View 1: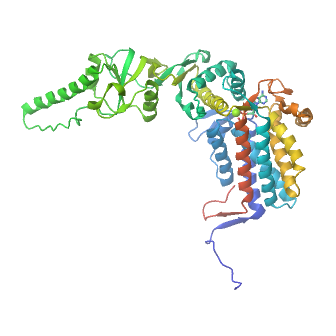
View 2: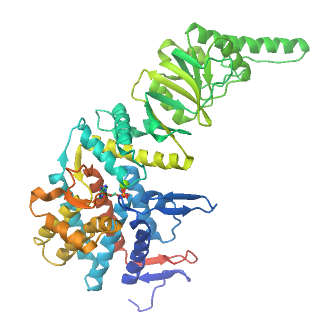
View 3: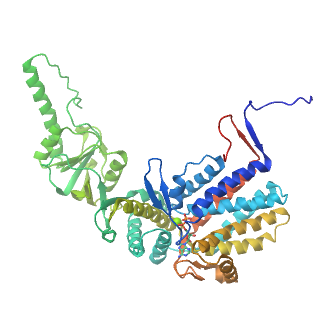
Length: 529
Ligand SMILES: Nc1ncnc2c1ncn2[C@@H]1O[C@H](COP(=O)(O)OP(=O)(O)O)[C@@H](O)[C@H]1O
Ligand SMILES: [Mg+2]
């Protein structure tokens, strides 16, 4: 072997090695965390976000803040992505996940500074994460899907950190009812939360918001002669341009003389009349089309007392079909009774500034809408985001049927048990497990700090409160500023939320710790710069 160095990087490539690489990544991640840390919990502060167009949003939702950031550091971006994935998988817990993973990394840096190699640290973190999940499984409380008090408590806990005024109970009730409507025995309620449509109507008070057994589609009737309300509607759902240029009868139209024009018009009229006859024969009183309907045909329908809406998008089509139990038909000549859907009432109404078609009393009662009424548009937008989170949390709780106590309780108990567990592990991994436990405590610590309470004093009290296994739910309530049994106080969250925070947080930390080199292509800009 020769001693000539082999150059494998192109000129201009920058390379950062070993601990300097780690430090740079971790510091960027800590910087991002600082941005959202003060939003955690009921006493979290809001942030004002100003986008590149100067539009301003005020929010205390960690996920919203992170989504709005334009981050250059790759590692910090990975953290934002973990937060986003938690938001998608659970609908809540973003800020906690970010705080936890950043603290894991900060603690790892301290160990590295004490000349401990990252290998035993990542090993210890993995052991601790597995153990933590095992402990959660053991201590979490099993519930059933009709434990409405606990389900509502989970909803209210998720709302504690949101600006929803005095309407927590009201919305807990409303959202639980909505989720129960779409609940499925197959344990997949979470994936169906999208079936709950939130429709915003400005102008009234939030307290007048209501659950509507049906589906709202933002469409207006095509012709003013059509009825405003259709009772016992027999509904055809079609995907067919209701015009005459191209017909399903494949008519060839050639025009060469004025007489032909009359012929063509007759032909056009005939085709439209054929369509109309099919609808009339089947007793159809409402037509829903994903494609266009000409003005002429709309007038024909109106004359027969048939209502119609057109140009529906995919998700609206799906929502309608599901609600009314209809099959979509492309070829109108093949339309039959079994394809049709049913709704007790189809109503066209204006809510706020928008026109809606409401299908209610449907074949499938699993389609519901939350009609959100309230003052300013910005407030409605915020409430909509909150309710979406809450719906997800309730659905997740229903699907997984296990809850733990929030307000730091579950993290204090995990930390305590992990410290005991670390004694069983020899070598440097033991130190890592202790660091992991301390990173879990960062969540209650932040809740305390954000409530303006004395951090060291309250943390000492909390640790002391976890004496026996019976004390597992001792936590802090930062609304009343008291330490007590948070399960009994109704501060509960789905165990799955905590599982996710632990899994995602520790995986991200380990991934970053394994990076020992940052190689950036020329011009990409070094990370963190
Ligand atoms: N009354 C309360 N007292 C203290 N902590 C609470 C209370 N209600 C909720 N929490 C806690 O607030 C945390 C969630 O805060 P939040 O700002 O929503 O962040 P995340 O984005 O992590 O959901 C959870 O740990 C939850 O247990
Ligand atoms: Mg939350």
